Image (cartoon, rainbow, N blue to C red; front, side, top):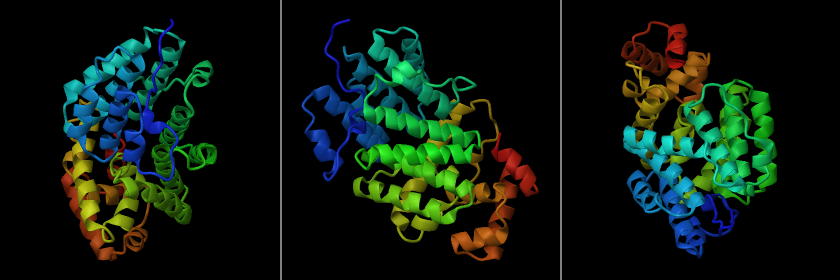
Length: 330
């Protein structure tokens, strides 16, 4: 098929030394610029603005633009709690992935199929991206898919492998892809925490926050809140209370929306019962951290940890850490 191809996710292109909005404003193509702005708003947790901008491109004649718009529109509506819109967007993407318009779009839809499988568990066992498709994708998209691969390995508790993928991807990115490097550093912080390497986790977290703070990109921290096991609380709750409050508000909204897609049949949602702070503490307890370890990590007393855990047990209807772990892993 002979047609003019457009950039799939312009926000994933390389740019350094300038604000994201400046880069976005320099994009000549109007549709590419609109999709990039929609993603920018999403990363800032501005779900309404992201949904509105992406909606402008849902009927674009260009399949790359439609695919990007559907992805951003769906993710924004997760945060808005519009479950039916999310399902509709993802259904269109899944159907399109089985109706390849050309080899380039086959590669993009395979990438989207992989992303949704990792983040929303839409396909059971996650089939890997086809190598011939990966070769056709822009560098930024390939790097983001490596983040997704590391995330998938994290979910399988293959932490050493996940760390290797993360480090390799960051080396290849070399700081040229800010929005992608933000996600890579966050998955590095998650993995390092599970390897009990607090210094490495802190290094990854602070690199992620350095990128995020410049652009007000709080959404990636919202998406990874529980998996970061208290790092947001440790580094932002007291140092930047207004930012932490904004992140907490978004965590509540986004996690509820995500759960409706990921596990719609659950009638006992932890996301509806615990505050973000309680959920972070619960995740740490479920990862076998002692009360003393939690207290020292969050700079609170052991009695305060016991107080919070007692409230958490009562809210979710369990009596001990083993049951709490089972509850959180549902």
